[in-house]
Amino acid sequence: MNPRRTLLAVGGVLAWWAALVVLWLMLISTVYTLEWVVGAGAAGVGALVARAGRQAVKRR
Image 1 (cartoon, rainbow, N blue to C red):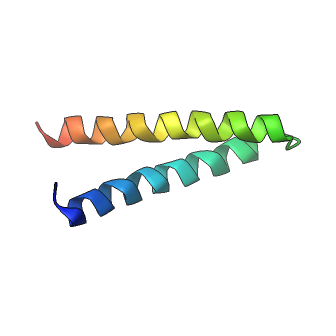
Image 2 (image 1 turned 180 degrees about the horizontal axis):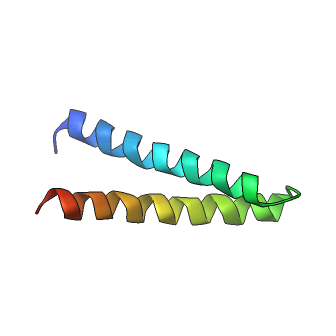
């Protein structure tokens, strides 16, 4: 795989993850460690799904 393409893919996933974590933190009232871990994990799954969705649409 092309190194530039890999870097763009990782950057895209990280951008989605960061945006979803910020959204998660805005929606909860208090930040406990367990909630942070669950939110970060859910944001990671969401970021990977967003990346896969964008790739599926781009291939059309």
